[in-house]
Image (cartoon, rainbow over all chains, first blue to last red; front, side):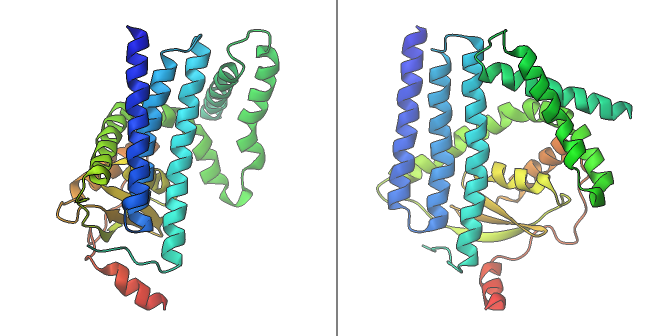
Length: 97
Length: 189
């Protein structure tokens, strides 16, 4: 039961990574691509972490995974702001449909 | 003095807990970890900028309640980021790729400091919005210009203010006109 739930979470997580990568390739400019990376990949990573936590051997292992997820979340939030500021400093105008 | 001690102990507990996690819950390393956790907990007092002494004294004290209040709102943030991830994933996978981006500025009611950065990070996880701090404003890039984002931004800002225990400052106009991006680019040039 726990095993199949874990597998389901890992697969759905991988699906969001896939969608995020498709967005990175298809979206028209740096800002829209950041949308895809920050949101879809964070969600995918969160689901993968959740799936792995179900398989963790100890509470400390599960907690460590949670801390890793929080760190990645913080880092990707900061990185997306930095990339967006960089793009604006380079006067890259947003794509408008 | 009392509250500084509480803050010190709170930080110590937090860092010691992280040590416990990183050492796979082993008991024999806890004494060593206590030493490092104590050193790390004292760090903000050692490296505090003397010119900002009042602010620096207030900030570490607020760390533990801030972490706890943040944890209380975590379910809401997680739910919103789930929605945000599904939203952008669907947009990326749909053959016609429904995008209608726009940029606008949101005048911050939060005081400068870590709170606006936290707000920008959270806004970037919410459905359809991406934000960066630009002075006293939040520059927001949205994927769907036909929707109104003002209510969500104000709600999020109020929640971040609650987490950091800071007061929202009133602004004369809550939202500036769209198209500001272009104007600023012209001013820059």
